[in-house]
Image 1 (spheres, rainbow, N blue to C red):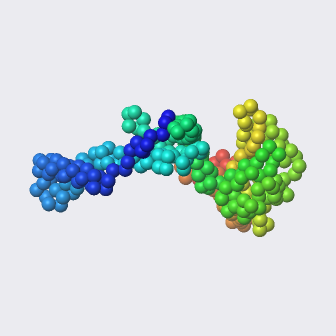
Image 2: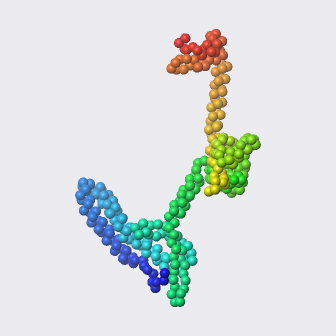
Image 3: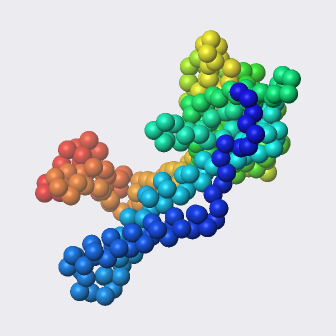
Length: 315
């Protein structure tokens, strides 16, 4: 296309914009006054004031967008494009927003080229709708945010086991920063509590394309041991080849400590029950059947353990 002598559009003057805004607000206010008077809430000064403000915004906002904001954005975009003969973006690819025939807005990629023929200068423009790309980029951004903010540690390695990415939860769990882990092998946090057979089974599983899920212990940077539930999932490319592995590690150290305390408590109770010199038993509150008896009860009452457990408190 041939370059016009002047830009196709100009930004409207502030006075012109002010008159448009004033006119829209004036008409919206008149309509609001007529509508509010019809409402039963009009008898209340506070309610009438709130209704008046809400209706003024509702009535004026669409017209302000369509009559003022939308043309301003279009004019500003064209002014940016044509300012200085488009010299600022000639030979470049820029992203901007355009308008379809129906008035909807969409992201686009614009490339401009220019050439001279005699005294005339011509431009060619290539416009590409990048809506799908923007949606894909937004999806990737959301996935990245989800991984970054995940409560569980996430580690991504290549096929050879070199760490390519870790999330903040991994640093909180192990104490190792991304700078200390990138390029390293996960054996960096190896605890030494698992043998070669364990790790051979792990690699055979994930290299065959299956998901590995197992409980294991690893070592923090400060030397402390933690227990985790680890799930490793292979990632394939478009050809079906395994290229990466994603490991999600759930720290269960606190749960394991609680379970150990519970087992220790149960063991202390069992020893107290079994070795107590006085007869003791446990029975069901509903059926009154004996559930357990200690050796002192067996000696005192003369029943065997099996005979005792076949009786009830009533017997």
